[in-house]
Amino acid sequence: MHMIQNLPFIRGAALAVAVLSAPAWAQATAPDALVRQISVDVINAVKADKAIQAGDMTRISALVDTKVMPSVNFEVATRSAVGPQWRNASAEQRTQLQTEFKTLLLRLYAGALTQVKDQNVEVLKTLPTAGSTQVVVQTEVRGSGEPIKLDYRLDRPANDANAPWKIIDVNVGGIWLVQNYRSQFATELSKGGVDGLIKALAERNKSGAK
Image 1 (cartoon, rainbow, N blue to C red):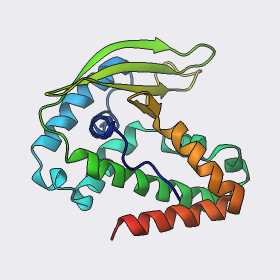
Image 2: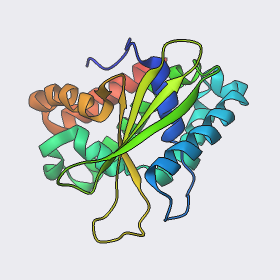
Image 3: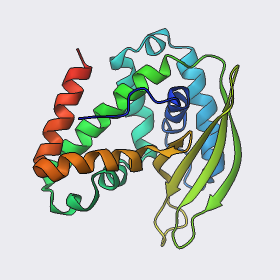
Image 4: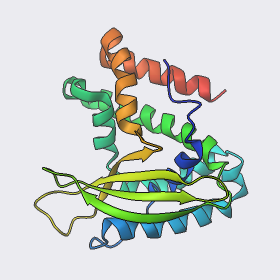
């Protein structure tokens, strides 16, 4: 199965991890403040960890498990990537899809994190999404090279103003990652359904681990 590999925004993907790596901040934290704070904290952590810079999957997994999951609605992200067939998936299949999708993203991040050098993130503005509770926080990754556009889509329940914001997608260089995977997953789903997609993801992840 063809997956994102040689994308020109690989350095931006590394910084995507920075904003997808959030501890459990106070519920009242505004989305732009959340993005700004966790960017600084996680980039500094990556710069200080030689094992992560070298692509150590154990260290990267630990980073994701302790800091990413609390501030990412991963079920929503996976559901969006799978599309309509998510509704027909069993609880076991949904768990498998989330596990394989997480592994896929981990491997993308593993390569991207090795590129973190002197970058920092500048938060530009927050835009509401018409007709929904979602917002998009626009940022720019700045370092020694050309700035990279890096935006984050966040959401929270419409009936709970105190609920924490959760990240549901990342736009790197003009491409929304979850949406992009959805178009790729559609090919496997059309050939083998949910089980076919799970098998293809597992094979891809197994191949990437070698």
